[in-house]
View 1: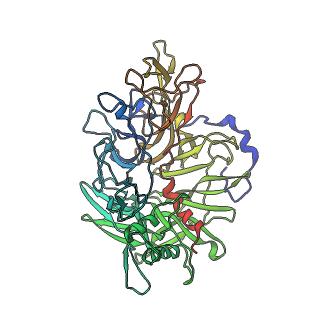
View 2: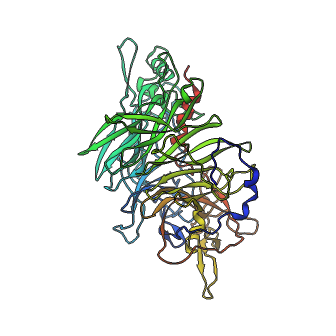
View 3: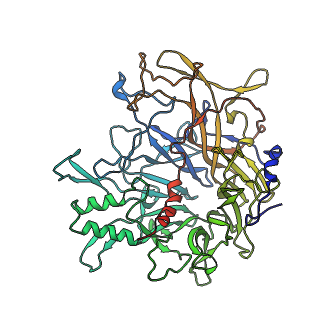
Length: 611
C-alpha cells in the first residue's frame, strides 16, 4: 500500500521496527574504492570528500572540502602526515580585510584509471586553482563539480580569483590591502581542458538616472548536464530591491570605502549567513555547441505584480536526455496569491519548442517541495516537507510527467505504511532505481543517523544500502575458521604507544546511479581524534608524532568523517549479516552537509523579504 502525505499518518509505523531491512531481491553491492580498510575518497590535504555524479563510463565528479591546517613549524623535518586521524581545518572567514582562502576543490575519478588505483580522486583545476596539497600556494578560488555526461563534459560552479587594492584606512589597519573578487559564484562547464563560463544575464548594476554602472558579477551555477550537452542550473536575472539599496549606498557619499570593496562587503555572507546583495534568480539552461554556451531563462512559476518587491527564486537541478528539466520555483498554489510556496516543478518544451513551467501539485499541509532528478521515461523524484506526528519531516516522492493529473506517490520505506523517517532522493536511472538518503532511527528527541538507500520503483522494494554490502565493504575481515570480525586498525601515538580501533564504513548517501547500477555518494569512515592545544594546533609528542585523544580506558576516541564512496553490484558473495556490539563512535559533522547552502540559501533570501 502506498500513501500520499496529505492524509493523516498512522502511528502504526512505530510498531513495525521488526520488519526493518527485511528480505529483498536487490543486488549485493561492494565498495570498490577501499584501500586497506580505508576509503580513497578525498583529495590529499583535505578532510572531507563527496561524490556527486557518475556517467555510463564509470567516471565520476565530486568535491573535497576542509583544507587541513598543518602545524609544520612544530615538527622537525617538515610537515607531518596527519592522514591517520581527524585533523583540524583552516578557519575560513569572509572579510574585506583578510586574504581569500579557498576551501572547496573539484575532483574526478574513474574505474579505468591511469594509475594503479582505480577510482582514485584526482584534482581537476578550474579557473587556475592548484591542488590543496600544494601548501606553497594560497588558493582563492572555490570550485565545485555537480554532474558529468557520457562525453565526459563536467559542470559545476566557481568563484572568481582574489583581487586586492591598497588599504587606505588610517587607523586599526591589520593588513596593507583590501581583498575582493569579481563574482561570488559562476556556472562552468569543462570539456577536456576547455573551460566554458556560464555567465548569468544580470551582472551589472545601473543606477536610476543611468549615470553610473557597477560591476557586480551576478551569480550562476550548473547543476546537471545531459548527453545532448544541455546544461541545467540557475542564474541571476535582476537585482533585488534591498540589494539595489545597498549598491546605491556604496555609490553614495556616506560610504567611505572604495566602491569595489564596499560592494564586496555587501556580497559576503554576514553572521546570519545572508547576503545584503541578493538577486532575482531563475532556472536556466545552457546549450553547449563547439565549446560555446547559449543560455535560456526558464519561466518562473508565477507572474509577480509590477509593484511586488519580493525576491523570487527558481532553480533547475536535474534533466533527462529528452530535455525535461526539474527543480523548484516559487509559485502561487492553484493561482491563489495568498498561497505562495516554493515547490517542485518541471519544465518541458511545447509544440513550438518553448519551455513551459509545470507545477507538481502539493496540498496545503505541505510547506515546500523540490525535485532533484528525472529519468528518460519522465519519472521525477523529489521530496516535500510536512508535519508528521508533530515534527517537520522530509519525505521522498515519485511523480510521472506522462500522467500529470495523477498525484505524486510517497513510496513506503522500511514498513508496510508510511513512516515518519525523513528521506530525500537524489537520482533515478532509466530502470527506475532511485538513490538518496533516509533516517534510520525513530527517536524523536535526538538527531537521527542517516543511511543511503536504494529504491526499486518496479517492485517497490526499499533497502538500506548498508544492508546490501559485502562484509569486506563494511570493515570486516574473515578469520581462518570462517568467522568475521572488525578489522583492527593500528596507529602509533606521539607517546610511542600503538593504539587500535575498529574499522567501520557507513554509507550515508547515494548521490547518483548509472544504468549499470554503479552508485556514488558519501560514506562515513571511522578515524581517531587528535589532541589540540588552545590555539587549535595538533599536540606533538616527543617522537614527533601527534598525540591522539584517549578515553578513560586508554583507547583512542573515534569519530566519523565523510568520504567519497563508489558501490558496484558484486560479481559474487552475499550481503553481510554479521552483527556486533561495536561502539559506533561520534559523527564528525563539519562539512557533512555538502550542498546544504546550495539548496537552503534561496529560502533564506525569501524569508528575509525585501524592504
